[in-house]
Image (cartoon, rainbow, N blue to C red; front, side, top):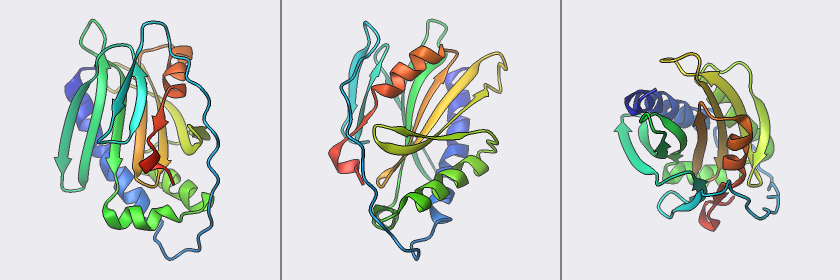
Amino acid sequence: MKRSFRRISAVIATMAFTTGLAACGSSQSTAPSANKATSSVTAPQGWKKFTSKDLGYSVYFPGVPEKDTYKDPTGAYARYSTVNDKDHINYAVSVTKFTRKQVEDSKGFNDAQKRKVLTNVARLLQIDKYSFTTVDGHMAISYTSHDSEDSSVIMRREVVYSSAGLYGLESFGTSSSEYKQFVDTFRLSEDTQE
């Protein structure tokens, strides 16, 4: 699975993220949701902390990530990723930032509305089997699938809801224990908190 394939997938994901939020609407009643406290980070040995101030998060990567930016009529998509020795992406964080209006609408969403956004994202990505989870105290969905170019490669993904946008944490062909450590190092910046 080369980098170019991930760019195509990004278009699909961006459309799903944007449509997922729009389907919730802002006319529903809102109630605050409590964020859970975050714990200290334990990263795999040799991994380095990466902070993206412009996208509002930090995470530990097994190397120096490269930025990839893509824009299409549905919105903007940005990703930082690392590659293995075969030039295949092994870890990535992709971000779809909400528009100013979507940010204002989503700030007051209750848990049911956040679940609806994430459920719509799963439907648009045609993901049948997913579970709700929490990443850094934020609601998320988790699922696994197979890479379309090489069905033997397992893709693991969490889609994290934030009032600033949706964050996709991905791994390709890595162990579930390393992926869990990757996800456990993810932190949203203060300005991306609900």
